[in-house]
Length: 367
Image 1 (cartoon, one colour):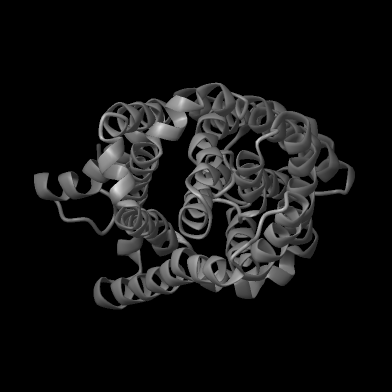
Image 2 (image 1 turned 180 degrees about the vertical axis):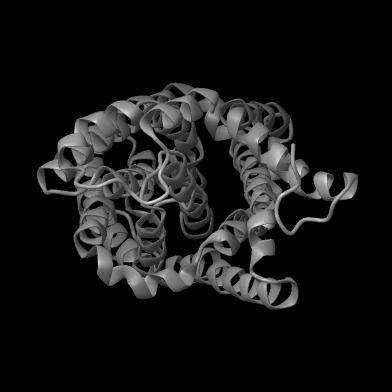
C-alpha cells in the first residue's frame, strides 16, 4: 500500500498510517461480535461479583461516565464543529433530521414502549434512547454510502446542542406518565459532561493539532481516533453489563423483550424516512445523511445519562441497543446502490468527484 500524502516514507510511515486504519477496519467489521462479547463477558464476570458491585455503585457510575467521555471525545475530534455555520445551506434536510430525532423517535418510541414494555424502568430506559441525539457514527455510515457528509455533520452537531434542552424536557413528560420523578439537575449535568465537554475538548484538540502539525495530519489521525472511540465503547458496554449483571440475569426474560421494540423502531425509521425524504424532494446524498442521523442513536450518551440520573435498570435498553442498531444500519448500507437507484429520477446532476455506481457497488461489496 502506498504511503499517504504527507506521511513519512518507509516502514515507520506505513505503520503510522496503516496500523490505525487496519484496526479501525477490523473493529468496524467485527463491531457486533465485539459488542456481544463485551456484554457476555460483563455478565459472566459481574454476576459472581454482584456483592462487590452493590457496594461500589457510585464508583462504577463514575468510571462509566469517564469511559463514555472517552467514547465521545474521539468522535468530537473528527467532527468538524465549524460546519454548523453552513447549516443554512441544507435547511430542509436539517429540519427533517431534527423532526425525526426529536419528534418522530419519541412518538414512535412511546407507542412501542406501551405495546411491548410493561416494566416502567425498562420503558423509561427505552424512551431515553429514543430522545438522545444521533450518533457521530452516522457520519461514517453516510460517508461509506457516498452521502452528504457535511449535512450529516451539521445534523450531529445541532442535535448535540439541542439535546441539552430537549432530552430533559421529553424525559420529564415520559416520566410523569410512569409516575416517576426525573432529576432534571442531574440530567443536565450528565448531558453537559458527556456532550458539551467532549465537544469542546475535541474541537480544541482538532485546532491544536492542525496548528502544530498542519491540517493534513487530521486526515491521517482520523482512523486512530475512530478506533479509540470504538474501543472505549466496548469498555463502556462491558462496564454496564458488569455492574448490572444481577438485574440482567434475574430478569433475563424482560430484557429479551427489548429486541422487538428496538428492531421495529430501526426498521420503521430507515424505511419511512427514506420514503418521506424522496417525496419531499431530497437528493440521494441528502437523504442518506438524514436517514443515518435519524436512525442511529447515541447509546453511549443514553447509558451515561441513565447511569448517573436514574436507576440501573434504565441503562439496560441503551446498552443492548447497539446490537440491533449495528445489524440494521449495516444492512441499510448494503442496500445503498438500490436506494440510489430508487432516488435516481431526482438526481439532476452528478456530484463532483463522486464515484460511479459500478465503482461504488464494488466498494460496498468490499466493505
